[in-house]
Amino acid sequence: MTPLAAEAITDAGSGQLVLAAVLGIAVVILLIAWAKWHPFLALILGSATLGLVAGASPGATVTSFTTGLGSTVGSVGLLIALGSMIGALLADSGGADGIVNRIVDRVSGSALPWAMAGVAALVGLPLFFEVGVVLLVPIVLLVARRTDIGLLRVGIPALAGLSVLHGLVPPHPGPLVAISSLNADLGLTLLFGIICAIPTVIIAGPVFGNFIAKRVPLPVPSLLARADAAVASGDEDYAEDAIDARPERRDPGFWPAVLTVLLPIVLMLARAVGELTADKGNPVRDTLDVLGNPPVALLFGVLLAMWTLGHRAGMDRRATNAVLGGSLPPIAGILLIVAAGGGFKQVLVDAGVGNIVADAAKDANINALLLGWLVAVGIRIATGSATVATITAAGIVAPLAATLDKPEVSLLALAIGCGSLFFSHVNDAGFWLVKEYFGMTVGQTIKTWSVMETIISVVGVICVFLLNLVV
Image (cartoon, rainbow, N blue to C red; front, top):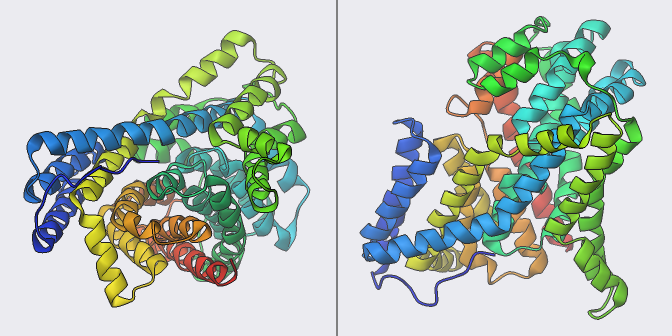
C-alpha cells in the first residue's frame, strides 16, 4: 500500500492542479512516444513537471516522489522478483515445454485452438508476456505446420491466453501496481481476475482466432525466424535463448511443473476464500492469512520450484542458484519503471489532483469503474505501455477507491488492467515482437494482434461490470 500524504504539498486551486496533471502526463507521453526516452526517465521528469506546476516546492516534490517510489518497490518489487524466479526455473528446466507438449500431443483437430489458449494461460501465470511468447512461439509454429490447421487459429489463442493473464491476474506487474495503488485485496482481485479471464480468453482467443484466420491467411514461417524476430525486436537476451538447443533441457515432469505453477495461486485464492467464509480469529483463517499472503505464497512457490523444477530436472545447487540469480537482471528495467510510476502516482495524490478527479466524477455521476478504464485506455494508446497506463490511471482514480467497498476496489483494479491492454499499435514493443515472430506486415498485425488486444480490453471490462452487479 502506498502511503498518502499527511497534508497536501501545495495549496493551489483546482484549475492549477488540473493544468499540472495534464502537463505532467503530457511530458510522460511525449518523452516516451515522440522523444523515445526510457519510461523510467520520462516518469521522473513528468513527476517534476507535475509538482512544480502545481506550486509545490522542489524539496516537497522530491520527497513525495521518493516516498512513492520506495513504497511501490517494497510492495510490488518483491512479488515481481519472486514470480520471475519461478518463471525462470519453469523455462530453463524444460517444464514449460513439458506442459505444452503434453497437452498439445493429446489434443487434435478443432480442439487445438482451445488447448493452446489453456496452455498459454497456464504457462503465462508466472511468466512475463515476452518470455511466454518466446517459449510458446516454436510450439505454435510446430503445431501449425504439423496439423495444417492454420497459423492464426492456434497463434491467436496462445497470444490471448498470455495477454489476458498479463493484464488481469497477479503476480504480473500491471495488476500488482493497481492493487498496491488502490489498496485492493490481492486475493479477491485474483479471484475476480480469473473469473473475468476465462470468458475473455475464450472470446479473444479461439473464437476470434477462427474468425480472423479465414480473412488473414498466413504461411507458417520457419522456426529460425524465432531468433530473427527476437533480434529485430531488440531482445538480444531472448534471441540467445531462441538459438539455444532445446534438447539440452530436461523435462521435470508434467504434474510437478503444473503443481509448482499453481501453488502460489491456490494459496492466495485460499486466503481470499477464508476471508469471505470465516470470521476473524478463526484458526483456519489465520493460517490461510499467513500462507496466502502474496510474498509468502510466492516464496513457497520458489522453494517448491527449486526442488521440482531444479533438482528433479537434474540441476545441482550451483545450476539452480545460477538460474535464480539470472532471473533478476532482466526485470531491473520493469522494476525501475514500476517504481518511478509509483513516485509519479504519489505526487498526483499528494498534490491533491486525485481528489479533484474524484469530486468531478462524483458530480458528473461517472461510474468509477468506467472512469478507471477510460483513463487507462487513453494513456495506453498514447504511450504504448500497459504498465505506464496502469500506474497513471490508478494514481488518478485512487481517491475514488476510498469511497468503494472492498469488492468494488478489486474490480476497479481489474477495470484499469483491462483499459491498459486496449489497441496495442506501433508504439508498443509487443506489437513488433508479435509482428516479427509471425512474419506479418504492419497491416496484418493491426488486423490480428491489435484487434485481439481491443477485444480483450472490451470483453474484460464488460465482465467486470457484470461482476459488479452481483458482488
